[in-house]
Image (tube, rainbow, N blue to C red):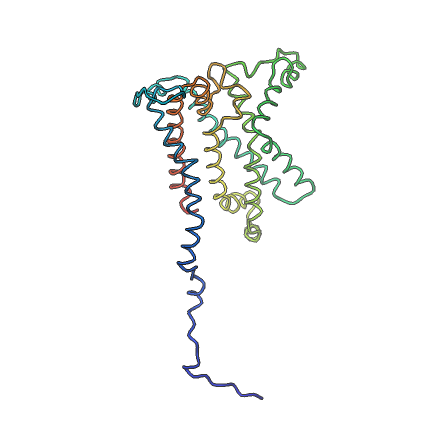
Amino acid sequence: MARPIATTPAMQVARPPLAAQATRGPSWDGRFTVLVLFLPPALLLFTLFVVLPIGEAAWYSAFNWNGFGKPTNWIGFDNYRFVLETRAFWLALRNNGMIIAVSLCVQLPLALTLALMLAERFRGAVALRMLFFMPYILAEIATGLIFSFVYDGDYGLVASIWRSFGAEPPHLLASTDTAMLAVLIVIVWKYFGFHMMLFIAALQSIDKSLIEAARIDGATRTQSLRHVVIPLLYPTIRLSVFFAIIGSLQLFDLVMPLTRGGPADSSNTMVSFLYNNGISRMRVGYGSAIGVILFVICVTFAFTYKRWFMRDE
């Protein structure tokens, strides 16, 4: 039997603790190389396509300019005053608020309910997920054109349903009372599938042993859902709320094929109001002021939401 060889302090190799080895990151030279290679192109693109356009919009908003030639008619902050004195602007802002409210109170609860039903593996679950996700795949312009025919008061699907009950079909998109309601229905139909897939992905990543432990402790299905599943979904819910609000503030290409912001500005959003008053009418300075206001609203919300609700993520 071989005898173990005794080691002397001189023969022992000093090794750092395991914790130090685990936490030791890449050297500064390696990180510096990565920064030199990847940061300048990213900063260049961000400057060209984000910072400079924002700066130009802020500059043009101080002029009464139609987009041709060099802006020379300096009017300072008058464009902002004109925007805030316009009734259509406040209608557009109200409509954005309605879209946010419907997204948070109808769209997200619907998406979460369907996600809880379809997250389990059963026959037909994948087909149902794809069926509910398909509206999100459609381009917004195509969706708007499809529903413009659906809502048509003479030949559309809604008109056919109303005639089958012997009633006079409504012209939903031509009335100031129903145009925005029709747009809201399309928004819920179009985007709830995206949030549903986010929730399904989060539900499938939950450790099933946590739910089984709650069941063993005597929790009912409702109690497990309320005290285990929903709290574990909070990060995804916060992210989904962020996407819903930012998307609601930026909504444009779904409104244009449906109503173009009409009738009488009743279905305008902030971006469609910008397009109709700044681009279509060649009031570039006025439109730039609207864009700056929308940018300030979005940035303020994004940083505030990140600061108060997503600080640990």
